[in-house]
Image (cartoon, rainbow, N blue to C red; front, top):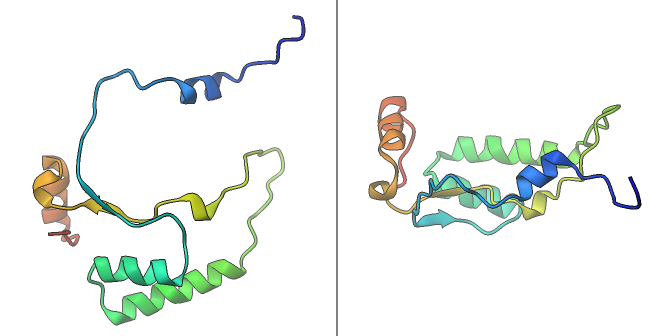
Length: 114
């Protein structure tokens, strides 16, 4: 086999250029990456949640801060950088949202972002 490193077929697939042609260009309201109490408050405000829901989310966030990530035997993955994730993104206008999403939000009672 020589000195060539082994190739990971999953990583090769992930690194491939997207080839199927489906793209949805939607102008989005996306908050900056990172997670903090301010981000939790911002998400709650953007969603128009009541105060009790914000307090519940803050309590959960504070509990999460005290948790240690489990270490599973025989499961290996890179350390998750929780500060490198966007925790909220929504279409700026429901007119930009795909029809299926609009139908789902109406039927489910989920709040819209209009």
